[in-house]
Image 1 (cartoon, rainbow, N blue to C red):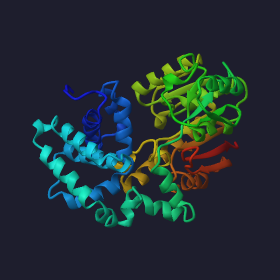
Image 2 (tube, helix red, strand yellow; image 1 turned 30 degrees about the horizontal axis):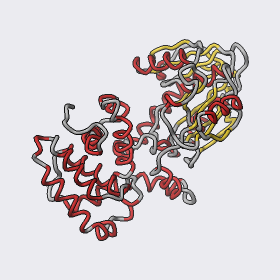
Image 3 (cartoon, helix red, strand yellow; image 1 turned 30 degrees about the vertical axis):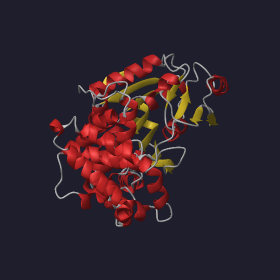
Image 4 (cartoon, rainbow, N blue to C red; image 1 turned 90 degrees about the vertical axis):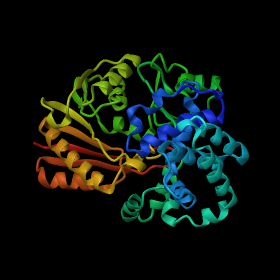
Length: 411
């Protein structure tokens, strides 16, 4: 959007972050590319602000509610959320208010400058009492139903899961073993003053997240960005040379690429979204890996495979800090809807698995309905299925939350 604001100013970041927050408040996912329209110079600051605002949305709603007689225009409401987030992280409150008012001057003809100024100054005057009045459930910065599900499933761990979900995610790398090794790449990072810690035989946990263009050898395909929990899929599937393998919900292609780096296999990567299939092809090309990429629905897969990776669509509750919009967009009833689709996918994919083959069921969820309960129900119906390995990874400072169940076909 044209603007007279300096591109490196906080006001400019506010101006571009507020409409994106407003689109999420209106029900649109960040995965739909809302950040792509932000000018490149402002994108890092805008993205940081959007993600920070969405991580704390429940608390911000509670803080703003007493200060607003009526819900304002969506972009102005979102701008106030952005300003609250910055007031929580900056020491110069005067600058934050001034920059928010300047951004308001660029929205809706500037009609809401006075409202933004008045609400923020009122907030600063009464900040302590407003913070004290925030309900306990809002302090968790998660929907109340979400917290209750976690409390029921993980009575000893739910508070840690919630706290972790409110923090920025870690950044980890997967070494392309066909091009380099961990020790060699670690030396290259050190030469660039990038700190990292080795995890497993091919993983590195960065001390601090950074843009991919700062990673040596990234363009050349020596390394990929992939969460350490997501890398676990490549360890659980043990594949013989020449195996026919299907990655049934493959986009954006990280797990498919991992398998191709580790094994000499005939791999088909499939996804229902043509645009995301293009992304898979781009990732394989960058890594100099060869696999078949098809557009298709896991509910209608046909063929016979020695192994299948079923990384099924899910609530994304295990990666909420990485996808903070899901806390705005998910509803309690969505979990059973996901579970029904997952069950249908699992049953259909099982028919395409050869006897003696293995299917790795995976989600980035921490809700039992999508994970352990799903597999328990499947095993009760499918007499030729045996559970080999089952793992629930809860989110920590080092990795996101994932679930894995390795199923073997016995006949």
